[in-house]
Length: 106
Image 1 (cartoon, helix red, strand yellow):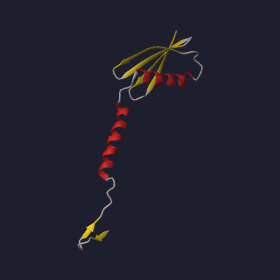
Image 2 (cartoon, one colour; image 1 turned 180 degrees about the horizontal axis):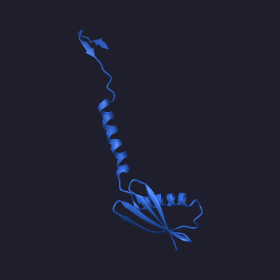
Image 3 (cartoon, rainbow, N blue to C red; image 1 turned 60 degrees about the vertical axis):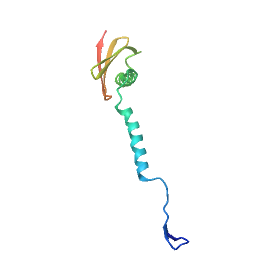
Image 4 (tube, rainbow, N blue to C red; image 1 turned 90 degrees about the vertical axis):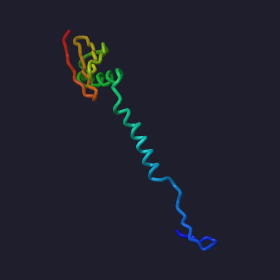
């Protein structure tokens, strides 16, 4: 839009709202913060939660009462031990969240 000033000069007025650059900077900052949670190493509690869910799916309520045993990290894997009345279980949890159950009779 062009307006004529008092001296006959043409003035150009623009909307002084937020710019694309500030939106881009905010997006990059928020994306970086959100992705930090994805790349953080797995904690003991997270490994135990994944193992317990996996074992519940594996047993399907047939194993009896499960007791959490020992948890240890070896290289990029967590070994989470559980005990039931007739069996022992070890759930191997990878850092990417994949898990596998192994079973031993008592």
